[in-house]
Image (cartoon, rainbow, N blue to C red; front, side):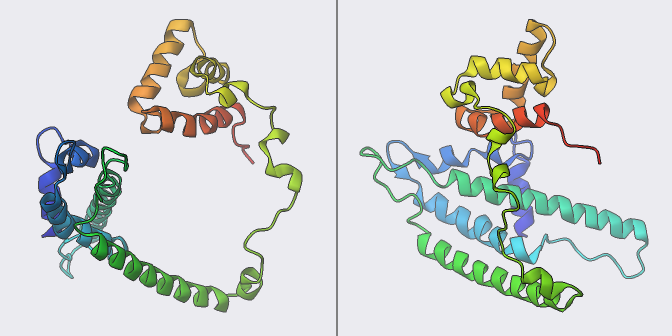
Length: 242
């Protein structure tokens, strides 16, 4: 089955059921010879194509439980189905990232998805139409519910207080964020006790290194600066317990 193929890949030595460890980018793109079209096509046909279909169908190749099965058996099957869906979704995400390939430059002039681009674009249009139909049905059901007409009649975007649309109402400009200054970012995180920081210098530094090494939101420069403000603000202004 399709899931069996995915499971065989995830069980390879060194993968540990983490799609990123498959290293599809390195497997499919060679700096000297360009995209490996045969490998990309096979990967598309055998895994990516059916996995994208399953985002909506929720198919996982699990056999249905017998009709006389108890509650525990049904709960176990539901849990296994959810786990399989998580793995399938994680694979699709990683496949989309890795098969983008290198950015076009003077040295890399290849079309990275040339081998299956037409099929891919056709599939995306098909899936979007399916989701559009599903949402239309949900919209009809919502409209029929008590208060549904009032809800769908509201504007999609409504600003209640324009002054609250800027973070400057919560705090002044953050120089360390404007300058992308790592040292000052470390001190700012330490001041609010983010990621178990805030103790002595050594412990704070170890906690900061641990954050960079183990949290995927901070494992490279681009991700770090995309997420550090959220981390800082969440620690500075914790949610109210109402």
